[in-house]
Length: 426
Image (cartoon, rainbow, N blue to C red):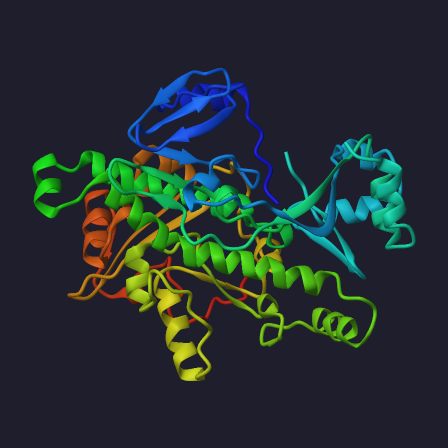
């Protein structure tokens, strides 16, 4: 679960980027014909495009799909509370202190019948009720919860997959993003990630449309409405995969005591680099910060259809080779990814980034950098390339280094010899 805290700094940055944030604006309805929204106070706000990002309880969703789509209750509840590191230290408990020291950058998960608890570092409901729910669990967990001064409690809801997220026939230009289009249960901690991905993709599409010569757009028959229609099929398979994965995790996290629970616990306790499991996320795998259109083409994957893991070991090995060529790193599981020293921290400017391009004529182009330098140099444009040739051209233009022999590139682990070496970055 990702928490987004708006600060005065965020607001200032938004204004510098030309984004106007208005608070206290309740949207009553959208007028698709006029491409405007009507606020509850009667004010009309007109624009070229309307993006509905008003969450699972969206007031605009029904206007897009043509019928009322109400979220349904899952029967699950979530409690959320925060406390400071100092509060934990003041418990003066050796077990808790050791736990905190060993879990500075990791996520800890307690699983049990019909419920689970998650502990992680981040920068109301009934507190007693929450503590009672986990009475008799791991003593470390019960001690930690005594530090809560308050807790939030909310019902977890979802709804079925929508037929469409977009209303894009002249003169209408409207799209749903995030939870208003594809709400997910929090059991994969990917809801905010998928929403940000929606925003990044539609921003890239709209920016490219805006920057393209109008005559060229006209010659190609490209309109704003067609841009929105490109957005949905490009994103929907991945959001659907996340929603389905969260539903599966809900079952796995909350198994009642019994044979299935015992098998799950055995698999967890015996995980190794070679482990295989019916719970697919337990297996090891390659992780990449992003898979752009050009990278999907390089991997031979469909942009619109999710791909299952190959059953043929040779096909799997070939895929892993290509993932290494793109600079992806192998980890036993997402949690191990963090424990291994993978610097994925919110706002950490030193988080490493590697951009890789493989030209048709041989060799490899790379830019080895970090989040801070990437933002300053505008390297994110590289991921806008639609083909690997375009990607190579962008890397070259932005100061990349070319290696005629890819084996000479120190940032790529092409033979897998560094897999499992926690000290190796890019």
